[in-house]
Length: 68
Image 1: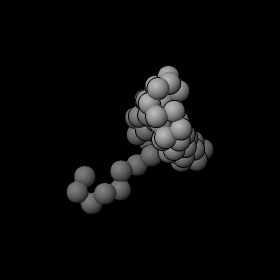
Image 2: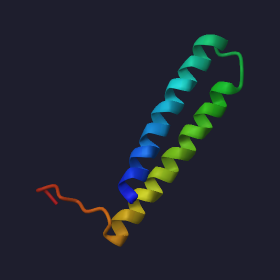
Image 3: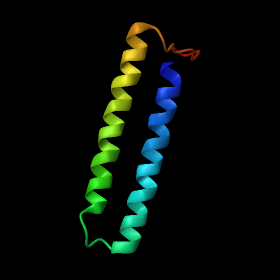
């Protein structure tokens, strides 16, 4: 249940990045919509980090890399 939520957050971050680029291209940097898109992207990234740390601490996500 946690992994689909993480993929959704990653997709939402990418969508916010694309929307911010479109706002930047259309408004040529003269509006606050770019800053709102950045704020949403930062908020989603913080939620993503909290979700990953939660998953690691509860054992729902495991690190399977051989160097760990």
